[in-house]
Length: 444
Image (tube, rainbow, N blue to C red):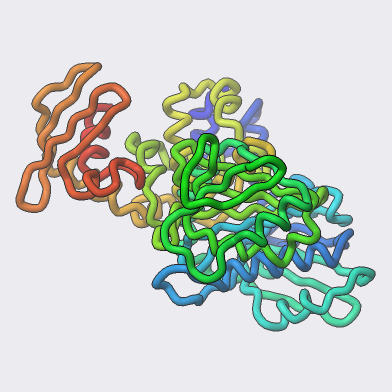
């Protein structure tokens, strides 16, 4: 059955005598959502390694409380997703330039998943104090619900209530998953190599970029790029990981294909902690526009709602498989993926090399509200601000309205350029400008 039928089933919200395929799944999940509202508990159970878990959560809290740009530290609220036999904690630094995620895998938890879902709470001083006091032999019980997250130890119980998700974090979630999806594994460091590498991080603030490369059995940072080296902007941000290094079995280094962003994944066996760095201290993930190109084609809101009804938190999201199973062309699925990403509903797991679903309450109009370049491009389209000079399958040239000037947009195959200041300054590395977006919208 096509996904369009799924969308129809969702929009009509009717009971059909004969249900099949995706319609059955959607209606079943809608029933589950009704139950969740009555019993808002997603997970309740024990943590199998309380000390390691507390160290990882404290590292996440350290990331969220930090800032490496002009924005002062002000946020401390991780996003918590429970489902498919694992729990994920996610967060950004206040400057939005560092993304961190703690994955508690199946062996890290011993409890019951009553349902699946996502919430976000503050980690205030009582929670941080409780985590800091956890000992190796201590028992820890974790509860995750739609309205709160609780941790109980031998000494205390702390409950954190749900808070509003910052819009800047939603924009960060949009961009960071696209960077992660374009990353490849570059290095894998052993325990000894990890300690040696971090001992070599320069003291204080480092201006500019450094490059991570392997020299014999050692890994070092250097101001000079070499073949196969990994570019790391704002290397001092890596010190956020220092508290968990003695426990890591290995550290895997990834880099995005364009060399703009990198990620470090500390693997503890039953737990993984991922740290992704934006290209530089002054560049937050929320300011990147790399997802906009997938959003130039409008997707029916019913499609977005239908997929949100079908998938559970942390469920793997395979756009190719969905396209084949539900008779959706790949171009439309790319656009749907971009729309889901733009409202924070998709994440990316470097270890599994696959997207996963993140269930969040959302309004689809936030797609435009959180992406002003896309909104401005649509305005250019509706006000006839684009005039084509030449429009062929292999070459497009257009004049597009700017601020008191007309810009020239040229699209030739995979190459695209514009005469505006945004494109001149960033050369497409921070997403397309509104002028190129408008041309692509009109060209279908």
